Image (cartoon, rainbow, N blue to C red):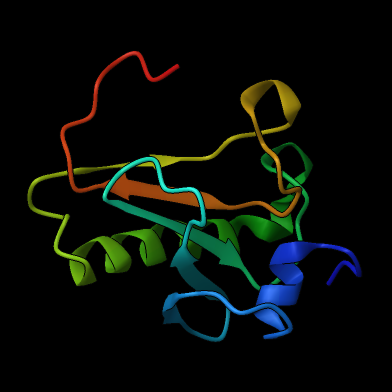
Length: 115
């Protein structure tokens, strides 16, 4: 865990969040600045700064992030209509918290291109 990482503090329950799912490896919670009716962040409990900094030994947790995203979408009833999964990587992609995370966004039709 990184000392000043807001997501690490959420994992340690030092900062409150609206958790919708948690297991031994991941935690999912509502984004505080939602871009759609459903906007959940799925994060690993292991601190990894970004997708640009993953290693071969991170492949299991990366897969678990997508499995968790799917579980959350089903739990929040957006799976059938559809949802978007986004991973922003580094500053030009608008990553603002440097703890890898997956955005699960749904509850409305999405447009393309996204940004």
